[in-house]
Image 1: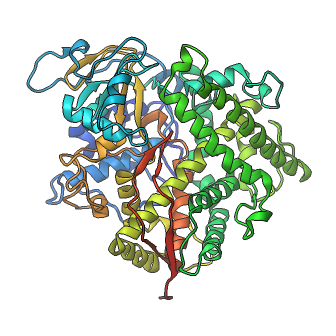
Image 2: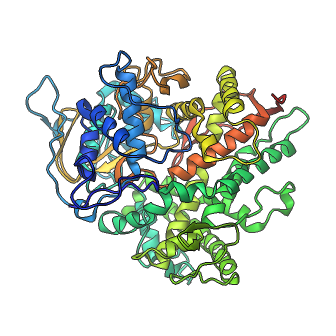
Image 3: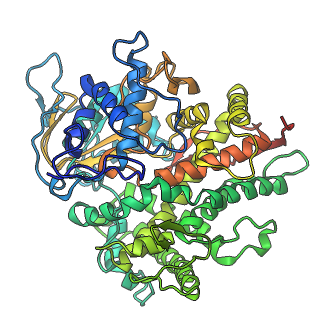
Length: 622
């Protein structure tokens, strides 16, 4: 069996015949990481046998503490296990290991029972045919359509950590809230991870436009929905091919100068937008979306879009339209994915989604084609047979060839041009919203916690300063800033939860859940438990520092980017974008917030409940 391959360029654990240097293939490694009593053993082997390219947010001072060390308590184990899980998320499984039935020995049988209980005994509210628990939910005093996590917490309090809550389109839906059960869920679904959701996106991409007319995107999808909505063989066909360029640290770092330039320009944009009280306008959320598009465009579109021009009236129409259209598309998807009555009869929501998707796709594809034309004018073709040259923005080198990101994808065997265009579309419409929300949440929590803000600024001053250009080493040195970012994702996550459809019977919470049922692990139900996160209601970044007694009590309790083969494929890009902006803002400015508390509201992802009317004041130069 071929061994697993880490995608980080500097890793010495390349694909070889006969197993990894210490005798594990990809499947064995993940299975052993998942075995709690043994994960520190494999951390020692990884530290001795491989050099993993560090994330921009990782500290290069981290070291493995032997199990016999006095500091080797749960907190150290957690941090080591989490870092290993995150760093090794870029591995590729060999095709023969994926999409096959495998033996499963990770059943979570409760300690007080020798046999699991049947799924019919799972507690939960009453369900009706077709509408499920919808009447119960709508009549519940804790139900708020914008804060559904409050309702989930109320149901958990009433029925326990594992409960059933069927909904329209989801006839067999189980919620879990214990990290031990999440671990078992990942074990069970590791080799064929089916992530329910985006079924409405798959439907409209399969059926074409909403108005019956021919559009430029009708020939793109050809019945395929892309890795966001596909499952099984079709998902794996694309995912395993695009994963390498998306997780290769060398490629991502090559775009750091452009992302850094965008971040510096956004600081100047903040200064331009300030009023006489140094406050941001109520539209600052939209300004963050513009930054996210401009930053992401340096990779996906290989060029600057002009989103950060001072005078909004001169903003190019297409970038501004993309920002607006992304919001409309995500809003429409929120309705079709949460209430799936369109599966039984046509609804206004599915028609609205068709229309929003049609317009967004037409505009975004034209932007991508602009990039193709720019590449072509520089003596290269943007087809699968592109030749080496310079690209509009920059290029990265590999041997004697130079390639843009777009060309790198087009050269990958097994990917069609339509596959690449669909993937870029998905990167644009998912990357803008989530990245901007993560930055806004981090600035808000730092504004509400000035002592922690000062610590971040002190670390930036000491480890980075105010260089003309940021480097990967600058970002890797920000240990406390990394902890703040993780604590931000714990208290104000962007992802609503982790969802899987079981492909075999699995024991969760002491119940045998049948194959075919869907399991949901809501992020906030996991992140707010005192038994797992001491002082869970407080903003305490030090819980993610080495040696902290506040560390999470289980290494599967905090997975902001999910885990395994379906882990967020764009996380390296997101880390680099976010840390560039945070460093540039906080090295120049102090941030404050003087209005009502902000909480999370649920759309397709979590976002802020109120405008981000920050106050930005200039710092004294150190």
